[in-house]
Image (cartoon, rainbow, N blue to C red; front, side, top):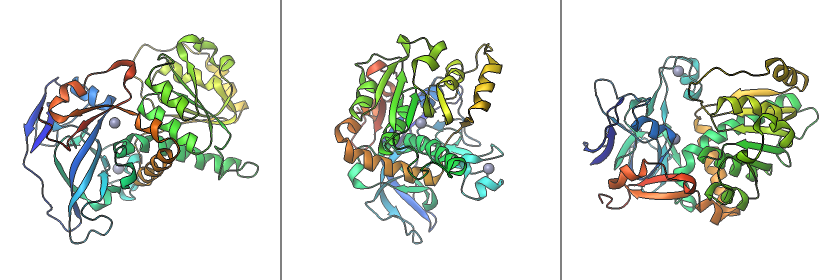
Length: 372
Ligand SMILES: [Zn+2]
Ligand SMILES: [Zn+2]
């Protein structure tokens, strides 16, 4: 079978032949891959950045945002049957730490986890994959055309879930914590796929969503944001250093831009008792000069919280599926516009390029005869 592989640390990407995987244990599931999403991580990997081949190999099959259909299940499998749609999660625990031993490899203490398609384990840019039932997440047929968005949505779902839990604990005495986001102001900085999917989830929860990016108002991402009832702020047209004066105070800040200076400046947009979830990972750059005392003063005097969040647990994948189902019911046309580019696997080179302001999510299609 075909697979898209890289030689980590180089810019070499190629279509390779791999042996087809089959079920060898009673708790395994075999999936025919239908689509795999491409994100910044894949693009970093193919440009020689962060990626590790499995032990003893020099090549890594890429791809972590998968979606497919079950073709065979082991005898002990109860949560999936032939014909079901679904996906496998990305991270596999270290097997040593308390988090990983409790099914929360997204909170791993040792850093010795592996990630399919990224770190020490082959990924999903191939025709068939086999893995354990515990890593399988079912996706209903009603969202099969966007099921490939589950993994990036799980990242947003985790950040929102954590924010809700933290706010429930500290505001529970006087705020409606079960519907805490309803009617609250949510600011999303960076409308890439994760930011836009966060907007979708926050709109599903009834938040008043303001999305900020630097792309043209009429390009694809602001258009989707507006179609789901969000408002757009063009970061190019405001003075970011005075962001707090320009943007109304937000109860919830979801950061997905990965620009360190902006990450700090966003503190100025926080309302009293607000929570700020950071998910963007900035590249290393020059040290920043910031009004540190003012920022910390604000944070303390307004009871504000900043939390970093990465990856997702199984629970968040399930929440992601729910968000997608609800969003698809409410805004079917807008949701379908999030996948802007689909390429047969033979055109992986085109898929891995950037496509400018008209790009939201690019997927590689393994369902057809995609050799061309
Ligand atoms: Zn990704
Ligand atoms: Zn661990």
